[in-house]
Image 1: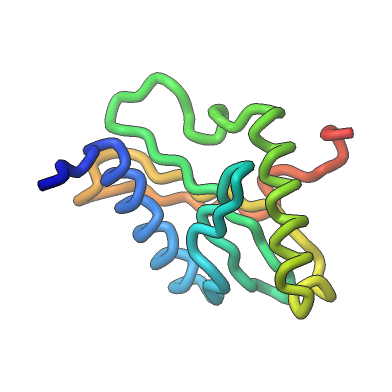
Image 2: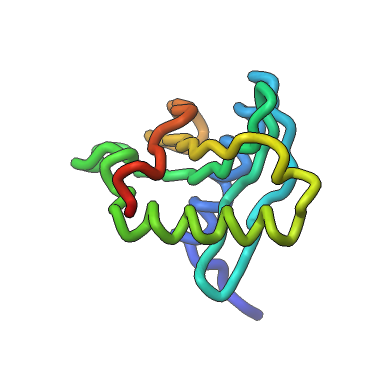
Length: 127
């Protein structure tokens, strides 16, 4: 029997909380966990006539770093590449503007704090 990795389980729980939060605020989930060899997009949603690639970040209670601060320049570059691949594979969505959102989940998962940051970063500083 395979044991469940507690960090992976917490990440999946945080993604579920994030998806629920986004849906409650009018976003439509297009896909969860769009995976490539390069990495994955946690969520891709449609919201306010935009396609949003959503990175979900979870931090346990007492973590010294804000979840938003954990997204490095390298990570943002990778997310942009993966989002572009998503649009190539799903061309029907490419007619909409692309946005990069972050959902920060922090605290205990049974009483989490969930914060949605639409347009958390853009691509202007990635070139």
